[in-house]
Structures are given as structure tokens and as C-alpha cells.
Image (cartoon, rainbow, N blue to C red):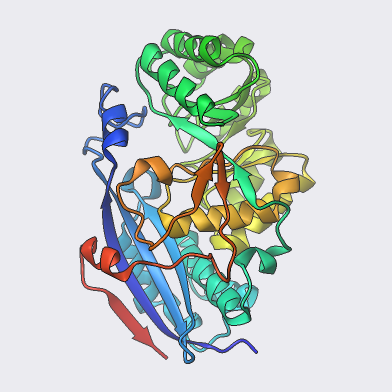
Length: 389
């Protein structure tokens, strides 16, 4: 029997980027390792962690990566939305009733899918802990116990990116994602250098981070098309829906959203208009695991694959992994999960291992890992917020 949620705790954390990530990003002109024209340096990342508990002491954790140039909200705003509004629909509810909880949140609070999502993720783990099973058992079971990953490369010189790509391939990775967006000519040179370094057997996808308008985007996509591109992420600004439709119509490379995807409606509108050929999912953004599964299943029904991607800590990595193994047969793309190289600390007592380019699930109930409360306390930027039924 699933016991109700009696406590919610909210933790606003900031975690420094790892030395290897900072070094790689410093190669780019803006120091961000991507084409997004944000002005503040990116030396640490903000997260909201949510802990749910029942009266028997079972816990469930959720995590959300928050960056204003992408999300438009901060972890403080998310925490206050839960404290003042959304938490009441979780307290007193059985965590296994995720669809009913999601429906109540949707009826009473418009949008805010990302905030709802971190609660949904924590509900899934609490329900799994209560039942003594891994989260993926609640999602239909696991098709495999290790997830082949896509290695992420920063925007830098062709020589630097090619050398980093070779290192990933030596470590067993079979898919790589390259940051582009300097110019169509520079994009071609970078992709050509990587392809020459890694050979024809490695899948390449690219990420523009909204760098171009439609004409420059088409020039860049045409220039890199001969090198065999798996998919291209967010070539146009978020609001240019008609531009995405025009560009996808004129390139065979599947386009997909990242900064522009925060609800299933975003994907449905663009896919039905012909503006994307793949779907990119951060688990918390479309409403947590409940929304992510809806999105993946919708995409599969339309004959389109899904790319799971994020820059997560330990709990976020676990979330992506459990969704991936439960829907592996319809994804069609290797997930991106860069937390193992992006951050100095992961705020868990143990981490999912990466072996031969694969993320290895540890087994055990819930996520199979435990939050390190001392490490979490060391990275808080505000006192924890607590709510009780």
C-alpha cells in the first residue's frame, strides 16, 4: 500500500563546474562553450532539489537544473511556487498516483511544467522506494541495464574539439554532440575536423543554441550535411516557429528543440507543422517523468525519435537513465548526460558509473543511489524550505 506524502523539503543549490569543463569552455569567445549570447560567466550551475517523505521514513528525490538564459526562472522562484501553490497537491497524496497529482496541478496552476516536473520526479522515486523496486519498474521495466551515451563537446577550435572527440571515442562513445554557431564556414571546418578524426562509424549531432536566423542556418546545415549528421538542436531563436518549419522543409537533417521545449504542446505544434524531425527531452521540463513519457510515446507514434539530454547531477542522471531504459526501444538516439564531466560534485554518496561509453544502472530501489546531505548542505545558497501535511 502506497502511503501518502507527509513532508516536502526544497533545497536551492549551486554547484561549481569541474576544472575540465571550465577549461574546455574557456576556449570559446564568450567563455560559455556555446553560442548563447548570455553575458554572465558560467562558472557554477543552479539546481533545485526536492525531497518527499512519508510517515514511515521513505524518501523520494527530484532534481531540476535551472539556468535563466534557458529556463526563464530561478530555483528560488520554483521553490516559492511549490511552497505557495503546488505543494498542496502533493502533500497528503499517494506518490504512486502521479497522473492524478499531475492532473490536479494542471487544473489549478497554469503552465509551470518544470516546477511540476521536479515534484513528479520525486513522487516516482518515493513510490518506488515504498514498493522496494527501481523507478524503471514503474515505467514498464528496463530493456537494458546500461545506457550508451552521447559525448558532449564545447564550442572551441577545430583542433581542440577534434582532440576531445578522439578521447571520447577511445573511451567507448559511439555518438558525439558538437556545439556550432560561430559562422557557417567555421561550422563546416569544425565538423570536418571531427569527422576526419573519428571516422565514419561515429554518429555526430550538432547544437546551435539559437545562433542563427533561417538563411544562415540553412547555409550551415547544407555545409555540414555531407559529413552525416544525426540531428541538429535549436538552430533558430526560440520564438521563430515559422523559421523552424521553413528550415526543416529544406534540410534532410532532423531538427529538434531544447531551449524552446517546455511542454508537450511545444513539440506537438512544431512536429505537426513539420518544423522538427526529432524530439529533445529534459525529464523535468515537460512535467517530469509523466510528461516525458507522454512526449516520447507521442513522438514514437509519429515515427520520430527522442534525444534525452541535460546537464544533471546525481539525481538528474538517474532520472534520465531510468526513462531511457524504460523507452529504449523507441528512442532511436543515444542520450546526453554530461554531469559526469560537467561538475565537481554530484551531491550523492555514490554515482552512476560510466564504463565503455555507457551509463551503468546500479540496481536497487528508487534511483539506487542516496543523496549526500552533508554535501548538499555545503552547496546550499538559501535555507531549506520545509512543508508538512
